[in-house]
Image (cartoon, rainbow, N blue to C red; front, side):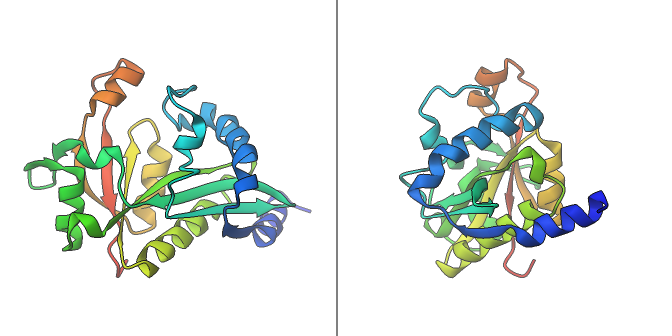
Length: 200
């Protein structure tokens, strides 16, 4: 079987389902397995429990890619994140917070936003379209809850930025948060905050 056919079959066999408590431990392993390639998370060890990064206890909705009975991908959403207070520059050159920029772009209140978080896949699943499927599932969940989707992507992951743009996400803020400078020692690195319009 050719590599393309094999990938197509594996993509068809993958299931996207709600995350269960027992998925968290194997997803921690998947997160660290993909980190050297994606630099996501930025640090190769976190200054807090990795379960917090996965929003194991505070996600409003969390989803898993399952293949061959194994949890191999993850994404979730939360009503608010620390990044929502990051200040940056919107496309008009105005200094604002990430939350304010997202709310303005969506035409809603800050309390109506939802932040997509912790999106990653096992290295062997990359390039199969599963990240886009997983992201679409989370966005549908966000919209089903009557909220408006936002996310933040770090400059270290240009492939993610390209994927989000291809999936209809629009940039609303550029920032250089202190946490990123502290984590990398590079003051030139930044983040891009994005929204996905409902009609995208």
